[in-house]
Amino acid sequence: MSEATPQSSASEVKAEVRPAEVTTVEALVRAQLSKALGGKRGMLEGAIPTLGFTLSWISTHDLRLSLTVSGSLAVALLVLRLLQRSTVQFVVNSMIGIAIAAFFALRSGRAEDAFLPGLIYNAVYAVVLTGSALIRWPLVGFMIGGVTGELTAWHNNPRLVRLCATLTWVLAVPCILRVIVQYPLWAAGQAGWLGIAKIAMGWPLQLGVLAAMVWLLNRDETPLQPTAQHPTAQQTPAPS
Image 1 (cartoon, one colour):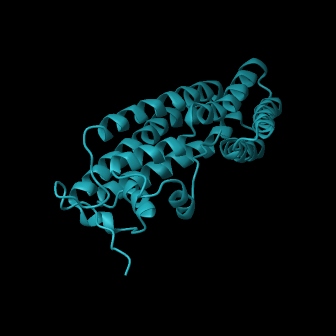
Image 2: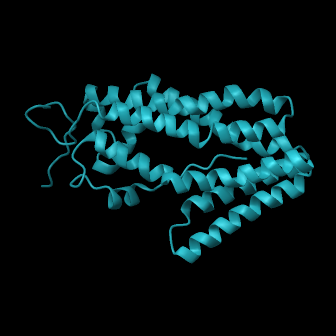
Image 3: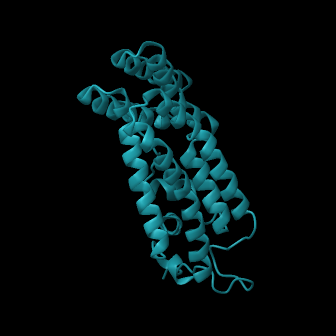
């Protein structure tokens, strides 16, 4: 099944996490990570359809039935969200991923191809994340710039660039590991093991990465605005 990563526009981010409310880079990144992951429920909603597909395939080896089970579980989660009048963003993302996975699998007739979009997604994301860190323009920095209103001003602060580069590398680790582990399983046609690997390397790995990032972010406080203690912190021009 394909990976679905929640995305937000710059305007939405600014509306939800304002610089006036968040004073340090670390607090800002923590807030954005929590929003992107969707909390425990968001991660669970991403795992349930994959679990349904995997169990159905292992027990029946019926591709259409397995895809139907996965899609039905996603629809049930969507209905539950609607009844509770809560955000459907993460369920919809999951349903889009299921639709793409179903297209790949039904087109080839191979159950393992349901996981091919996720492999491609992780491979591309790993290249983009590692590439941005290597050239010293880490993607996490642009997330900060999108909130402060100065998309590239953070790059003038070497300390902030180092922090963003480290966080970007940490975000890249799950993508790299998924490709290393799951590609051989896909090449060998092991759909059942692919489903198990996807679940094991989904939210459990994400929680491990989140814990590592929280540890990194709790070590220091880098202000979004300059202070006497941090004169080189990112500066946002005052309105004229």
